[in-house]
Length: 344
Image 1 (tube, helix red, strand yellow):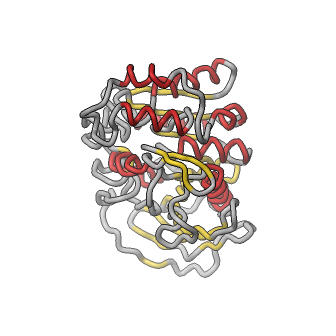
Image 2 (cartoon, rainbow, N blue to C red):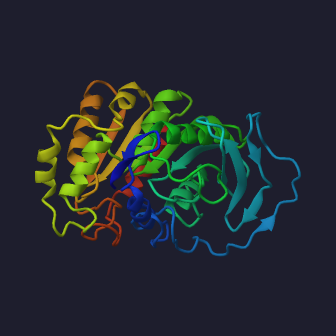
Image 3 (cartoon, rainbow, N blue to C red):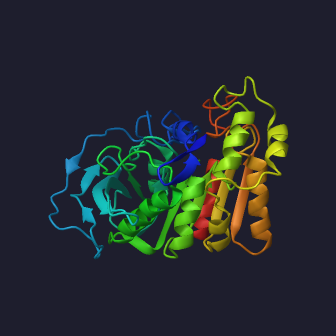
């Protein structure tokens, strides 16, 4: 998860592999994808078979679609699949108006649902497949999920992959607005979920948009891009730790550094939404103890933040030495319990 300056500002690009690890880990059917690794997770690259079977779609005969007025947002025709529905969607970024494209996954039955907008880690990440935890895991628990191709990827316009956090935050804000515009989504219960680099993007969006109702972040740093870069160099993230120092030594080394590049601290101080952070204690990409310590400080000051740390888990919440591997035990259900308690 290394970040280097690019375009209008410095930001980490090493979060790229995370989008792969984290997706792999979070597949509902325990498989692999492109983000965390777990007993049922994932995110963006290769993924397992959707639970429940067939992926064959039967087009809905409905000609009008349940939407609210949402400027510049276009919702496609509802597609009925085995156990869920999906709706193509496109919307203009709140940053620069570039058109982003994605999909809304919904439970099979009509209703009014809370929604999670998925924010990818770094790299060329497309919209979620239903088989990934971030889609099927949420939909099976009564949530709608909107995910989108990152700018410059798939059907989204723009250039991939900018490392300008406020620009990516504007993309996430626009995605949340598009979710709120769909009539089967409760506009008062739409929040952001994401992995790795999303730890910088989600607080930026939440700090700017009070309509975003929650923040759920896996392996997301709360230190500056410069801190993360130096930490992952010290731990030898690229070499899976083969030539690196220990997590404790690396964190001690960066603990006296001043912030460099993008710093999420102002956004974390500003945001008021309830937040839930998950860290693996074997993460050699993100300085988890320093990140968690800052969140604990904010919580002590009254911020509604929850932090959970899992032994044996890597950056992708798998149990291999540096990335991938079987999912670490025990972190998925508490995450959904927190969501139910805070979002309903």
